Image 1 (cartoon, helix red, strand yellow):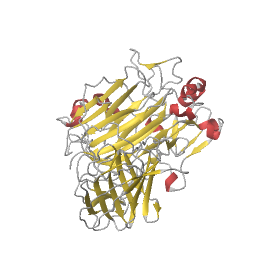
Image 2 (cartoon, helix red, strand yellow; image 1 turned 90 degrees about the vertical axis):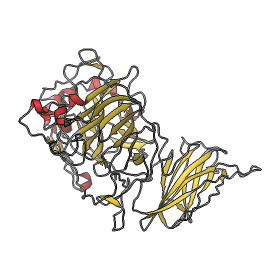
Image 3 (cartoon, one colour; image 1 turned 30 degrees about the vertical axis):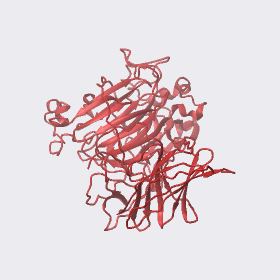
Image 4 (cartoon, helix red, strand yellow; image 1 turned 60 degrees about the vertical axis):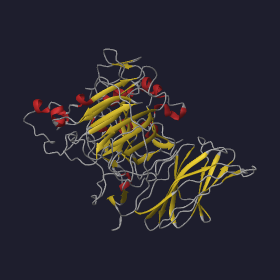
Length: 585
């Protein structure tokens, strides 16, 4: 830090009796406007500190800044916040609460604290005290070492079911405004992979809500008041809204996110293959980047028509995740070119699943022809059968093309996106068009800045909004989704997989996990009837050589990705944060 001057921020705190009282934190201002916090090491594995500047933090709500502190200096845990977004000055109020994770599994929480930043060299030093609350519980958890920035929108929504608590807290919110949605149009309907690694069954739980470690979990003992997903503890929420998952992408947390490793193309014969490579998926400046690159840049252009793309892997952490459509190994030939694009797809299948709640995403779409970004959800288990019978929720699907329209002139490019629900017994009978809406910006594009999407999901409906405007709202159909999709009339002789379900929301009454990916091209999502300018679409959806046709026109589409500037990140899907709340017991 160099020769930095410090101002002392004095705290005088009165502790309430508890099994084990946490000591007050000592805060010093790192001149000119940064902050250091020291917390006494009372035998904890780590201490989490959650705080906001000049903004109250109630009970165990998420603060503007939330850290798990593992670094020690002597007998103290030490946290130094030198982030460029933090600006503290004498007289500012720091609202905070502490979470001490005991090595034996117990948890101490020191809540509702506030301190005033003071200049120790001034003639008068002001000390502020608050009425503290210290609680001790017997639960086992471990949270992610992640910085949490201020929440941009805190709009209220229904409740999720199992997840990650970053700090184990709850968060208040405001109601979300709603406006009528938009019309429907074509959408990709590829078949998701059926791969993945199954988790251990859950034990009996006293709550629907749950949380687990973003950085690995602790095993549950007989005294753990929680439900368990695998070896990760999921403590109960104590107040609502309850923040059960938050990732601000200060680092790529592989305990939460699993990479897809496959060339299957998602059932759409897309032109990318997915891999776990820091050229394609990485975090910096508090954002996740999913960036496409050229396969030829890694293996050489000759590889596309003569090489063997072998993704089988040798260890559990690099094994192919989907062999569907020859996804684990392909041989390039002159007519059957290998996937010319390398990209990334990450999913929270093992790290976080939830049922019902509010999910908030702040993201920036990529700019570049034939890019297909998506943020969506699939079911943890196929309770009603294989895709699409067990459902799919698409919060965002967009295209990177700058000038791309349907035959009627409606824009379908980077200034627009769609939100969709998929359901039905099979690919041929997926009435997604009954649960689909689109939004086109009146000016600018989704690649110009970050925007916020919110999904409200409960026993009564699924609602997706964009910057506070309702885009899609699907209430629980009185006759269930089978009747909602007119499938009782269209295919009367086919069994309804939802006929014995306990809810009219089936198949959207099960836990789902989150997926973030950036695809390129493929068959279907870029309809042959649509118009791209200034050049036509390079391939036809019926062509047996679509990847080769696409690659042959590289000189047209690749410059739109702007690969020589900004590290090629104009073509990257960028995610600022994802948050999920459980809204009620």
